[in-house]
Length: 166
Image 1 (cartoon, rainbow, N blue to C red):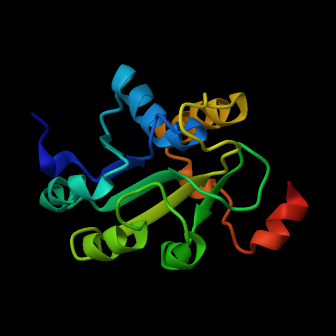
Image 2: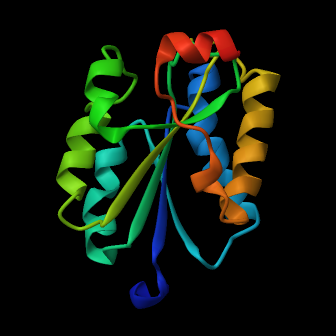
Image 3: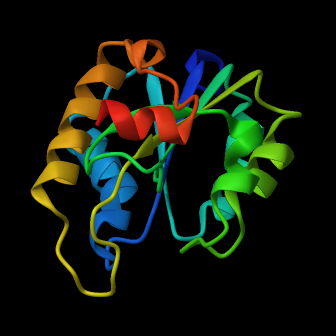
């Protein structure tokens, strides 16, 4: 049992492992399960992340990091912080049962700081394997989160600008 008073950071991993690169979030949750970090409470939200909202609300962590495969117009495996307020505009199509912006709005009362991190997928399709670029990105993100350097991840400020960077 985890002492909720000690939890100041929660990680909500989102995605569907049966949909190729969309499984980036669940793969990250698996990495934390294999090698837990005491400063993180990890939730594998799968394709139904709102199912974790009551538990996250009860913990009331200071920081919630949400990780999901996100179409950002970048090279596969690129990692960016995404403005949570722009998620509704960006994600016209989603593999989740509810758009993430609804979940984020619901959690704002209980969580001080919500950070969205996207991993650019290459192939999202039923029964496709995860690409090497996204697998490497998940491993890299695990290290960044474990070391507390997630605020150093660049922002996705302008999708067209980011395409030029890729």
